[in-house]
Image 1 (cartoon, rainbow, N blue to C red):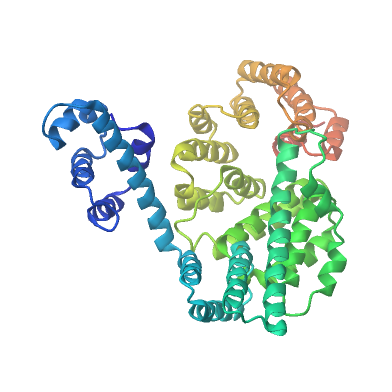
Image 2 (image 1 turned 120 degrees about the horizontal axis):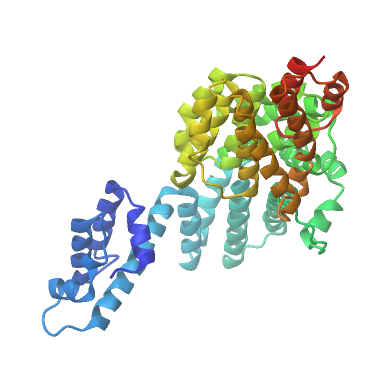
Length: 484
């Protein structure tokens, strides 16, 4: 039978890529063994049903080899084919990335001692890269690699004029510094959110955190010359800063202005990083101060959608980001926009999570549209994988049951959430603080509706003044209907 990792890679190929694999294997430059080509023909014939039965050792041996059967021969053939398949994947990636090609070219010329030719190519590449300011994180790493090769070429030519060598060496160090700071602050933004979301309380001292924390970035940015990457450094630093500390409305306004002024210089990955981190900052730092920031977040989503998703049909979306975008649209009651977003961009989710995310999104949207039976149908299709998913879905069940006047199922769901909340040790503080108030107000709503009674005005005021909690918008609207 074919090794599982080989089958997994083969099944990931489309028909066009499978044809390219055949051309790759037939090329004498990459493969001189006819047996590997014969194995590919058998794979091509059976694809995509690469069952164990069709690739039993004896069956494949008889199709490819004459003489007495030897299992080790087929095992070795499968192993060699797997190695060639991985080489094909690497060459396809290499061939699609012009910068990787150029970096290997200049290094290859250095190996051949063609130092001047290598440096001519490097100078041309640097001139092209420096003609525009780009905040692509890989740019700094690529420039670093080019500068290293340029310095090596100067050494190889015994041409170490102090000024030229000094300029090349300091440019190398500049790009190393940019790359470290850009990547370090970028990853620290993500790490800060993950620590809160997963309740990580490890008190270990990590060098990277302490180093970045103790850099006087604001003063450092002021020293950077105009026309350099001062704006890029400021943006990535402020994303890091506001993820971990407070941000005022005025600071947010200035920050958005800075981002929009430099937006065209971002590569697609950086645009997503900025978008996702900004949403996190708004939801965690600004919305608790004033719900008006949900509208700010929605306008931000429309802005980024036009610049990123519309022009990048092949881009992949992460589930948390997808959920946040839809949540914001639902809060500001932009239901048509939410439906269009689900229809237009759900195909960008990974295939293995796509159905679940669509069902969750449509379950939430249907609930907001008061199509509660339909909402339950969508939610019933979801299989729980994470604690946060279970909590979110269960609170939507609770809303649907109340609106359908199914009070006993609503009480059962309320008790189930309370028990899960009290017993689970896996709920992080970030989510735990959202549960208790929500349970209290849902209990008041169910009791009032089931007994056809009114709710005291003091409870409404208390709910309005409380911080964030699950289904706050629904709870407040419901309490206003039930208040004396």
